[in-house]
Length: 123
Image (cartoon, rainbow, N blue to C red; front, side, top):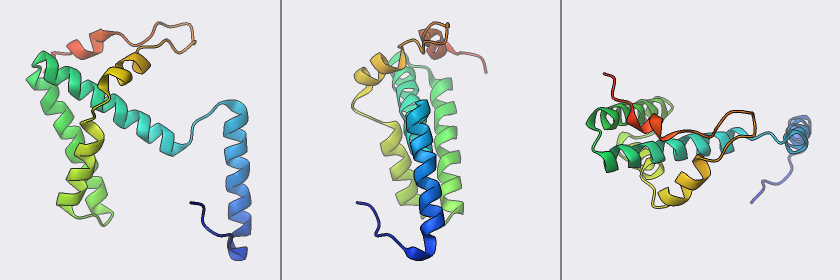
């Protein structure tokens, strides 16, 4: 639900509207959408690592999750609710749909992401 207009912040609101209009016109993405896509990609990577029994990749993913949680805690969050929220974003039930979406080419002349990403085994 949008917040009610505040006359004291009219310049900021207008700037935000221009920013969103520019994103719409250029096909860009808001930071919220980018954040959601990155967490979905991490969830897919976690699922693939779990499915393939890649313990090293699971350790890497857990490290990334803990980094995200630490950032949120440093901004005032409480550890347990923050970790739960991070885990909810990286353990999703729609991984089959994510796999389909994540492997589509970007129309930038390069092929779509390859499953080679999931085969990372370097220490």
